[in-house]
Length: 326
Image (cartoon, rainbow, N blue to C red):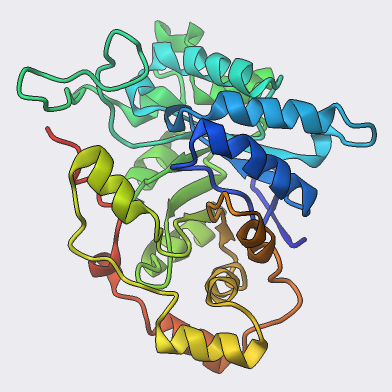
Protein backbone atom coordinates (compact mmCIF):
# COMPACT_ATOMS: atom_id res chain seq x y z
CA UNK A 1 0.00 0.00 0.00
CA UNK A 2 1.08 3.58 -0.64
CA UNK A 3 2.22 5.44 2.47
CA UNK A 4 3.22 9.01 3.26
CA UNK A 5 6.23 10.07 5.31
CA UNK A 6 5.44 12.26 8.30
CA UNK A 7 7.67 15.03 9.62
CA UNK A 8 8.26 12.74 12.62
CA UNK A 9 9.92 10.25 10.26
CA UNK A 10 7.15 7.64 10.39
CA UNK A 11 5.34 6.17 7.43
CA UNK A 12 1.55 6.45 7.61
CA UNK A 13 -0.53 4.22 5.32
CA UNK A 14 -2.48 6.32 2.82
CA UNK A 15 -5.74 4.50 3.58
CA UNK A 16 -6.91 3.75 7.09
CA UNK A 17 -10.10 2.54 8.68
CA UNK A 18 -12.15 5.35 10.20
CA UNK A 19 -14.26 4.42 13.21
CA UNK A 20 -16.33 7.55 13.97
CA UNK A 21 -19.95 6.46 14.53
CA UNK A 22 -18.91 2.79 14.68
CA UNK A 23 -20.59 1.21 17.69
CA UNK A 24 -18.58 -0.99 20.06
CA UNK A 25 -20.69 -3.98 19.06
CA UNK A 26 -19.70 -3.52 15.41
CA UNK A 27 -16.26 -1.96 15.39
CA UNK A 28 -14.27 -4.96 16.64
CA UNK A 29 -15.30 -7.10 13.69
CA UNK A 30 -14.74 -4.14 11.34
CA UNK A 31 -11.16 -3.79 12.58
CA UNK A 32 -10.60 -7.53 12.27
CA UNK A 33 -12.00 -7.51 8.74
CA UNK A 34 -9.85 -4.51 7.83
CA UNK A 35 -6.65 -6.08 9.13
CA UNK A 36 -7.53 -9.24 7.24
CA UNK A 37 -7.64 -7.45 3.88
CA UNK A 38 -4.46 -5.45 4.38
CA UNK A 39 -5.28 -2.36 6.43
CA UNK A 40 -2.63 -1.39 8.94
CA UNK A 41 -3.84 2.13 9.78
CA UNK A 42 -6.72 2.30 12.28
CA UNK A 43 -8.07 5.65 13.47
CA UNK A 44 -10.19 6.25 16.55
CA UNK A 45 -10.70 8.84 19.30
CA UNK A 46 -11.35 8.87 23.02
CA UNK A 47 -14.82 10.31 22.54
CA UNK A 48 -15.83 7.79 19.89
CA UNK A 49 -16.29 5.50 22.92
CA UNK A 50 -15.16 2.43 20.99
CA UNK A 51 -11.50 2.15 21.97
CA UNK A 52 -12.13 -0.90 24.18
CA UNK A 53 -13.61 -2.91 21.32
CA UNK A 54 -10.83 -1.80 18.98
CA UNK A 55 -8.25 -2.76 21.60
CA UNK A 56 -9.70 -6.26 21.84
CA UNK A 57 -9.51 -6.68 18.07
CA UNK A 58 -5.92 -5.41 17.97
CA UNK A 59 -4.92 -7.69 20.84
CA UNK A 60 -6.37 -10.71 19.07
CA UNK A 61 -4.57 -9.80 15.84
CA UNK A 62 -1.27 -9.26 17.62
CA UNK A 63 -1.68 -12.62 19.33
CA UNK A 64 -1.33 -14.38 15.98
CA UNK A 65 2.19 -15.54 15.20
CA UNK A 66 3.86 -13.37 12.59
CA UNK A 67 1.82 -10.24 13.30
CA UNK A 68 3.83 -7.35 14.72
CA UNK A 69 2.96 -4.12 16.51
CA UNK A 70 5.51 -2.36 14.32
CA UNK A 71 3.35 -3.11 11.29
CA UNK A 72 0.40 -1.15 12.70
CA UNK A 73 -0.31 2.56 12.67
CA UNK A 74 -2.85 3.42 15.38
CA UNK A 75 -4.13 6.94 15.93
CA UNK A 76 -6.40 8.33 18.61
CA UNK A 77 -7.25 11.74 19.99
CA UNK A 78 -7.32 13.90 23.09
CA UNK A 79 -10.99 14.70 23.77
CA UNK A 80 -12.35 18.24 23.89
CA UNK A 81 -13.02 17.76 27.63
CA UNK A 82 -9.28 17.18 28.10
CA UNK A 83 -7.92 20.33 26.46
CA UNK A 84 -5.95 21.41 29.53
CA UNK A 85 -2.25 20.80 30.20
CA UNK A 86 -2.98 18.85 33.39
CA UNK A 87 -5.32 16.43 31.58
CA UNK A 88 -3.34 15.45 28.47
CA UNK A 89 -1.44 12.53 30.00
CA UNK A 90 -4.51 11.29 31.91
CA UNK A 91 -6.57 10.88 28.76
CA UNK A 92 -3.72 9.34 26.78
CA UNK A 93 -3.19 6.76 29.52
CA UNK A 94 -6.89 5.90 29.45
CA UNK A 95 -6.73 5.42 25.68
CA UNK A 96 -3.64 3.23 25.96
CA UNK A 97 -5.36 0.98 28.50
CA UNK A 98 -8.47 0.69 26.36
CA UNK A 99 -6.49 0.01 23.19
CA UNK A 100 -4.19 -2.42 25.02
CA UNK A 101 -1.12 -0.66 23.64
CA UNK A 102 2.13 0.68 25.08
CA UNK A 103 2.28 3.61 22.69
CA UNK A 104 0.21 5.43 20.09
CA UNK A 105 1.61 6.02 16.62
CA UNK A 106 -0.22 9.34 16.31
CA UNK A 107 -1.94 11.26 19.11
CA UNK A 108 -3.99 14.26 18.06
CA UNK A 109 -5.67 17.20 19.76
CA UNK A 110 -9.20 16.48 18.58
CA UNK A 111 -10.56 20.04 18.71
CA UNK A 112 -9.07 23.53 18.98
CA UNK A 113 -11.69 24.35 21.64
CA UNK A 114 -12.47 22.76 24.98
CA UNK A 115 -15.43 21.98 27.22
CA UNK A 116 -15.65 21.49 30.95
CA UNK A 117 -16.17 17.77 31.64
CA UNK A 118 -19.17 16.31 33.41
CA UNK A 119 -18.77 14.11 36.49
CA UNK A 120 -17.84 11.10 34.35
CA UNK A 121 -14.98 13.03 32.79
CA UNK A 122 -15.98 11.70 29.38
CA UNK A 123 -18.62 14.12 28.10
CA UNK A 124 -19.13 17.90 28.21
CA UNK A 125 -20.93 19.35 31.21
CA UNK A 126 -24.16 21.19 30.46
CA UNK A 127 -26.01 24.03 32.15
CA UNK A 128 -29.67 24.00 33.16
CA UNK A 129 -30.68 24.88 29.60
CA UNK A 130 -28.77 21.94 28.15
CA UNK A 131 -26.01 24.08 26.65
CA UNK A 132 -22.47 22.72 26.74
CA UNK A 133 -20.13 24.55 29.10
CA UNK A 134 -17.34 25.93 26.93
CA UNK A 135 -13.99 26.42 28.66
CA UNK A 136 -13.08 29.93 27.58
CA UNK A 137 -9.56 29.51 29.00
CA UNK A 138 -8.62 26.75 26.55
CA UNK A 139 -5.09 27.42 25.30
CA UNK A 140 -4.00 25.14 22.48
CA UNK A 141 -0.36 26.21 22.85
CA UNK A 142 -0.35 25.34 26.56
CA UNK A 143 -1.82 21.93 25.72
CA UNK A 144 0.95 21.42 23.17
CA UNK A 145 4.06 22.53 25.05
CA UNK A 146 5.10 23.69 28.54
CA UNK A 147 4.85 27.48 28.68
CA UNK A 148 6.08 28.21 32.21
CA UNK A 149 8.11 26.56 34.94
CA UNK A 150 4.84 25.73 36.67
CA UNK A 151 3.73 23.71 33.67
CA UNK A 152 7.08 22.12 32.95
CA UNK A 153 6.02 19.01 34.87
CA UNK A 154 2.71 18.70 33.02
CA UNK A 155 2.71 15.89 30.50
CA UNK A 156 1.57 17.92 27.51
CA UNK A 157 1.63 16.80 23.88
CA UNK A 158 5.34 17.35 23.24
CA UNK A 159 6.19 15.50 26.46
CA UNK A 160 4.39 12.41 25.17
CA UNK A 161 6.82 12.25 22.24
CA UNK A 162 9.79 12.66 24.56
CA UNK A 163 8.53 9.75 26.66
CA UNK A 164 7.81 7.52 23.67
CA UNK A 165 4.13 7.27 24.56
CA UNK A 166 3.26 8.89 21.23
CA UNK A 167 5.49 8.42 18.21
CA UNK A 168 3.98 11.46 16.51
CA UNK A 169 1.57 14.20 17.56
CA UNK A 170 -0.93 16.10 15.49
CA UNK A 171 -4.18 18.01 15.48
CA UNK A 172 -7.67 17.69 14.09
CA UNK A 173 -10.13 20.35 12.94
CA UNK A 174 -7.53 23.13 13.08
CA UNK A 175 -7.64 26.07 10.66
CA UNK A 176 -4.68 28.04 9.32
CA UNK A 177 -4.73 30.70 12.05
CA UNK A 178 -4.73 28.06 14.77
CA UNK A 179 -1.93 26.15 13.07
CA UNK A 180 0.17 29.30 12.71
CA UNK A 181 -0.17 29.98 16.41
CA UNK A 182 0.87 26.45 17.27
CA UNK A 183 3.77 26.35 14.82
CA UNK A 184 5.17 29.62 16.19
CA UNK A 185 5.58 28.02 19.61
CA UNK A 186 6.11 24.33 18.89
CA UNK A 187 9.36 22.46 19.43
CA UNK A 188 7.73 19.35 17.96
CA UNK A 189 5.46 20.50 15.11
CA UNK A 190 2.17 18.76 14.38
CA UNK A 191 2.75 15.94 11.92
CA UNK A 192 -0.89 15.67 10.84
CA UNK A 193 -4.00 17.82 10.59
CA UNK A 194 -7.06 15.58 10.32
CA UNK A 195 -9.96 17.53 8.84
CA UNK A 196 -13.17 17.05 6.89
CA UNK A 197 -12.12 16.72 3.25
CA UNK A 198 -14.15 15.38 0.35
CA UNK A 199 -15.28 16.33 -3.15
CA UNK A 200 -17.57 19.14 -1.97
CA UNK A 201 -15.19 20.50 0.68
CA UNK A 202 -11.68 20.04 -0.68
CA UNK A 203 -9.85 22.38 1.73
CA UNK A 204 -7.41 23.56 -0.95
CA UNK A 205 -6.09 26.62 0.90
CA UNK A 206 -5.59 24.64 4.10
CA UNK A 207 -3.95 21.77 2.21
CA UNK A 208 -1.49 24.12 0.51
CA UNK A 209 -0.58 25.68 3.85
CA UNK A 210 -0.11 22.28 5.48
CA UNK A 211 2.02 21.03 2.61
CA UNK A 212 4.33 24.04 2.94
CA UNK A 213 4.66 23.34 6.67
CA UNK A 214 5.25 19.59 6.17
CA UNK A 215 1.96 18.73 7.86
CA UNK A 216 0.10 15.82 6.30
CA UNK A 217 -3.62 16.33 5.79
CA UNK A 218 -5.74 13.31 6.63
CA UNK A 219 -9.30 13.38 5.34
CA UNK A 220 -12.11 12.27 7.56
CA UNK A 221 -15.50 11.83 5.88
CA UNK A 222 -13.68 11.43 2.52
CA UNK A 223 -16.85 10.03 0.93
CA UNK A 224 -19.03 12.84 2.26
CA UNK A 225 -20.09 10.88 5.35
CA UNK A 226 -23.33 9.46 3.92
CA UNK A 227 -24.22 7.84 7.24
CA UNK A 228 -23.87 10.94 9.38
CA UNK A 229 -27.19 12.50 8.35
CA UNK A 230 -29.07 10.02 10.57
CA UNK A 231 -26.37 10.28 13.26
CA UNK A 232 -26.73 14.05 13.56
CA UNK A 233 -30.51 13.85 13.61
CA UNK A 234 -30.77 11.01 16.13
CA UNK A 235 -28.07 12.18 18.53
CA UNK A 236 -28.33 15.97 18.29
CA UNK A 237 -31.66 16.60 16.53
CA UNK A 238 -29.59 18.53 13.99
CA UNK A 239 -29.72 18.53 10.19
CA UNK A 240 -26.91 20.18 8.17
CA UNK A 241 -28.12 22.64 5.55
CA UNK A 242 -25.82 21.07 2.98
CA UNK A 243 -25.71 17.36 2.30
CA UNK A 244 -24.14 16.50 -1.05
CA UNK A 245 -24.52 13.03 -2.52
CA UNK A 246 -21.14 12.36 -4.07
CA UNK A 247 -21.79 8.74 -4.96
CA UNK A 248 -24.51 9.54 -7.49
CA UNK A 249 -22.88 12.63 -9.01
CA UNK A 250 -22.61 12.17 -12.82
CA UNK A 251 -18.95 13.24 -12.89
CA UNK A 252 -18.01 10.65 -10.27
CA UNK A 253 -20.10 7.92 -11.87
CA UNK A 254 -18.70 8.55 -15.35
CA UNK A 255 -15.10 8.37 -14.14
CA UNK A 256 -15.92 5.22 -12.17
CA UNK A 257 -17.27 3.54 -15.31
CA UNK A 258 -14.14 4.46 -17.26
CA UNK A 259 -11.93 2.71 -14.71
CA UNK A 260 -14.32 -0.11 -13.84
CA UNK A 261 -14.27 1.12 -10.26
CA UNK A 262 -16.92 2.19 -7.78
CA UNK A 263 -17.73 5.85 -7.09
CA UNK A 264 -16.27 5.44 -3.60
CA UNK A 265 -12.96 4.23 -5.02
CA UNK A 266 -12.80 7.23 -7.35
CA UNK A 267 -13.47 9.67 -4.51
CA UNK A 268 -10.77 8.10 -2.35
CA UNK A 269 -8.27 7.93 -5.20
CA UNK A 270 -8.87 11.61 -5.97
CA UNK A 271 -7.59 12.56 -2.53
CA UNK A 272 -4.80 10.00 -2.15
CA UNK A 273 -3.37 10.82 -5.57
CA UNK A 274 -3.03 14.43 -4.37
CA UNK A 275 -1.16 13.46 -1.21
CA UNK A 276 -4.06 13.32 1.24
CA UNK A 277 -4.44 10.30 3.53
CA UNK A 278 -8.01 9.01 3.89
CA UNK A 279 -9.84 7.18 6.68
CA UNK A 280 -13.21 6.05 5.28
CA UNK A 281 -15.52 4.55 7.89
CA UNK A 282 -17.36 1.31 7.26
CA UNK A 283 -18.48 -1.79 9.13
CA UNK A 284 -19.44 -3.58 5.90
CA UNK A 285 -16.78 -6.19 4.99
CA UNK A 286 -17.23 -5.73 1.24
CA UNK A 287 -16.94 -1.95 1.45
CA UNK A 288 -13.96 -2.17 3.78
CA UNK A 289 -12.18 -4.33 1.19
CA UNK A 290 -13.32 -2.11 -1.67
CA UNK A 291 -12.02 1.09 -0.06
CA UNK A 292 -8.43 -0.14 0.00
CA UNK A 293 -8.42 -1.35 -3.62
CA UNK A 294 -7.42 1.97 -5.15
CA UNK A 295 -3.76 1.43 -5.97
CA UNK A 296 -4.08 -0.34 -9.32
CA UNK A 297 -5.11 2.69 -11.38
CA UNK A 298 -4.41 6.41 -11.79
CA UNK A 299 -6.68 9.34 -12.57
CA UNK A 300 -5.54 11.48 -15.49
CA UNK A 301 -5.27 15.27 -15.37
CA UNK A 302 -8.66 15.79 -16.98
CA UNK A 303 -10.33 13.48 -14.46
CA UNK A 304 -8.61 15.20 -11.56
CA UNK A 305 -9.77 18.57 -12.86
CA UNK A 306 -13.34 17.34 -13.21
CA UNK A 307 -13.33 16.15 -9.62
CA UNK A 308 -11.65 19.35 -8.44
CA UNK A 309 -14.52 21.31 -10.00
CA UNK A 310 -16.98 19.73 -7.55
CA UNK A 311 -15.53 21.76 -4.68
CA UNK A 312 -18.03 24.08 -3.00
CA UNK A 313 -15.67 25.42 -0.36
CA UNK A 314 -17.30 26.16 2.99
CA UNK A 315 -20.72 25.71 1.41
CA UNK A 316 -19.88 22.04 0.99
CA UNK A 317 -18.93 21.45 4.62
CA UNK A 318 -21.00 18.84 6.45
CA UNK A 319 -19.33 18.66 9.87
CA UNK A 320 -19.78 22.24 11.08
CA UNK A 321 -20.24 21.55 14.81
CA UNK A 322 -23.41 23.64 14.92
CA UNK A 323 -25.06 20.78 16.81
CA UNK A 324 -23.20 21.83 19.97
CA UNK A 325 -25.58 23.97 22.01
CA UNK A 326 -23.72 26.72 23.77
